[in-house]
Length: 171
Image (cartoon, rainbow, N blue to C red; front, side, top):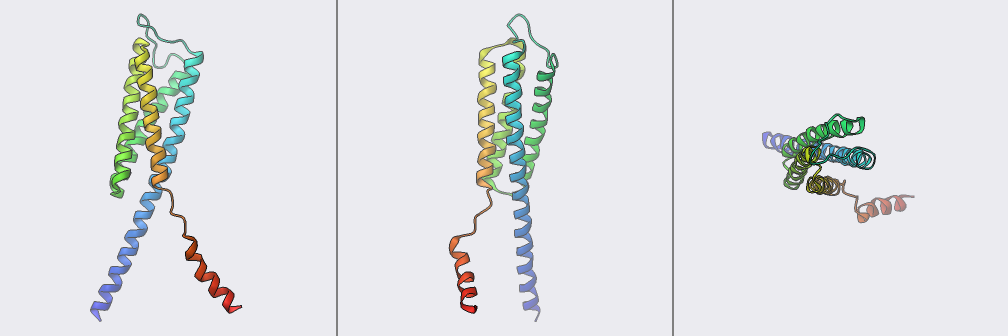
């Protein structure tokens, strides 16, 4: 009887662990979507400043809070960094290797974009602007990749067929 109890509790423990893992992966997916949205808003703010703001030169830098748009861009960059750190922590907690790698690369890309942005505000160098753009693109690819990897599995079409056949035979 104790063997039956042990087998039952072991099976329920595995189901609970499976549900916990599913919850962790669902949270990872939602935070990835949040990162994608934040990155798009960050891109839009950067483009607005690029089109309507005062560009720094090698002789005259700009302050990080010299305009409302650049201030929002900087603040959102800091929030993106914090979200990316939280994403890596969630991925490590879920013990899902691909999400750990994509989250880590996304974090490094956001850090790279931030340092490129600081370099751009100080010198106006085109290479710093390009670095910011490329790092943004890599981060966006990582977080979209996470959305794809963590997409909920669709129910196979053949799984519904037996239930439908059983219902039709009973009517």
